[in-house]
Structure formats: structure tokens, C-alpha cells
Length: 169
Image (cartoon, rainbow, N blue to C red; front, side):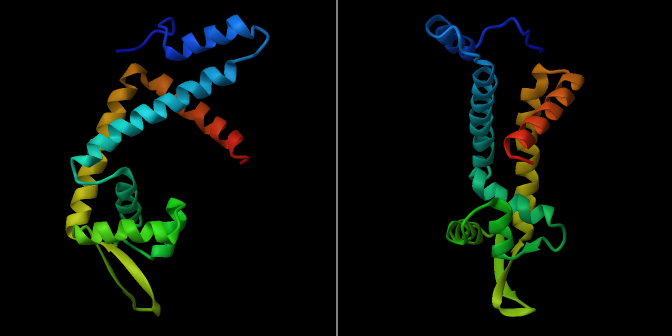
């Protein structure tokens, strides 16, 4: 079902309030980022609920998904995981501990460096991340049902441009 641009949302009410008290302000950025923030929070919460069905938080899913994207043998160092996920090694250790206790990954000595560890998905971890990935994508794809394929492509391109501009790329 495609939403029509004429439908009002909570951001419209905020913009109208600012227009009443500060009509000289250009609130275009607020209209865009207000919706981006609300969409990110809403979809983050929905995806988090899906991952919870698999016993995972979003952060734990991210660890498993990063290992899965590494392809066979699904192994990275804790440092590589931390860098990819932009986390401290201390924060990563807590996630790895929980995932290892659940049997979703294992830590082992690096055969090339006795001081280092490797983190590898277990068969159980691979199965869980594959199922959670598909379930999460289903929720996200369902939300995109408000757009047709062309609109979704345009939005992806526009968000890519906006993200590049915002991050200084």
C-alpha cells in the first residue's frame, strides 16, 4: 500500500508549530531529519524484536552477521570485529562472551600469532544468523511496501548522497 504525500505525520505538526512561532526559519532539514530519526528508531525497534526471537540483541546480531560476511571459515580477530563494528575491545568482549556461552561462536588461538585470538561462527551460529537475517529483511521489506520499486531506488540513492555529504565523504 503506497502512502500519499498528502497524509500528515507527527513531523508535520512540529513544522507547523515552528512556522507559527518562527515563520522566518527554513525547517526543511528538520522535516527530513525528523523523519529519518523517527524511521530509524521505529525500524530499529521492529528489527530488534525480530532478533529477540532468536535470542539476540541487535548488537549481537551485528557480530554474527559480520562473521558471516567474512565468508568461510567465518573467522575474524576480535580487533577486526571491533574495528568493523566501531566498538571498543572491552565492549566487544562482553558480546563475544555471551555469544560463546550460547554456542554461536568460539574463540581459539590464532595459529599464526600465539598472542592473538580468532573468533569463528559455529554451525549453530551460522544457522541462527541466517534465519535472523532473513526475518529482519522481511520486516524491513514489509515497511518498504509503502514505496514502489522506483521510489525505493530513488530513496536509497538520495540517502546515499545525504549520508556522504553528512559524513564528509
